[in-house]
Amino acid sequence: MSYKILSALEIIEKFKKQLSSIQTGRVTGSVLDTLLVEAYGAKMHIKEIATVTVPEPAQLMVTPFDKGLIQAIAKAINDSNLGVNPQDDGAGVRLVFPPLTEEARKNRVKDVYKLMEDSRIEVRLKRQDVLKTKKKEKEDGFLSENELTAFETELQKEVDNLNKEIEDIAKVKEGEIMKV
Image (cartoon, rainbow, N blue to C red; front, top):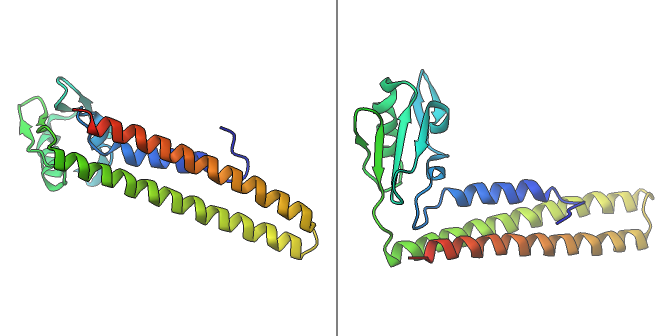
C-alpha cells in the first residue's frame, strides 16, 4: 500500500515488532527481543550477546558468545514475565515453554487487540497533527477551502486503509495464537 501523508510504515513496523514478542503455539526467538541483560556494565539485548535457536517447537536455546554471561542471561529471563524457567546446560541457557492453555491463548489475543488499539490511536494522533498543519496553511492563505477538503478526503482514505492493514495483521496473529 502506498502511504503519502502519514508515516504509516513506522506505525506498521512498530506494531509488528510488538506483536512478535507475544508467544504463539510455536516459540520463536523474537519473544526475547525486548529482554535486556546486564552485561559488560551495560544493559544489552540478548541478540547482541548470544545466538538464539529453536531446537524444538516449544524450546529455545540461548548460546552466549561469552560463556561467562550464562548466569546474567538466566537472571534476566527469570526476572522477565515469560513464564519459563531457564536451565543452564553449560553451553548456554535452554528454555522450555509450556503449552498454552485455552485461557492463556485468549489472554494473548486480548493483548494483541490492545496493541492494535494503541496503534490505531497513534494513527489518529498523527492524522490530527497533519490536519492541524494543513488548517494552519489554509488560515495563512496557502491553501483554498477546496484543497483542504480534498486533502482531508485523501487523508481519511489513507487512515482507513492503514487501520484495515493493522486489523488484518492482528487477525493473522490471532489465528497463530489460537492454532493448537
